[in-house]
Image (cartoon, rainbow, N blue to C red; front, side, top):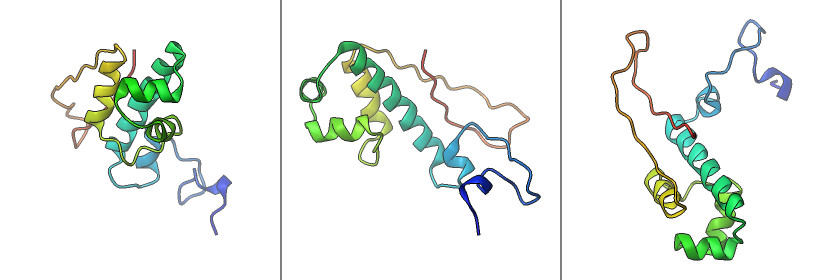
Length: 117
């Protein structure tokens, strides 16, 4: 049986390096989008903290209910699209940039990556 200590190990029992995306490491579907939503939510939560907004005031500013702000604060992101999270960041005075470029030849598939400045 797999224990918590064994989860980061490969078949040989060696520790497996992270890909940088825990969702991909766990083999979850939509890993890149999940990771993007978490990174966007992190930026939103940081902006809300900086502004010292209550969940109620944040909900008013972002035009969502307080329970949605609570879900966002707890990274329960199932009901939030990447586009919606980007709109929240804009409403909080943040620019969001999307850069499209050719993937390196060393990588088989293109990827989506969100970084915060």
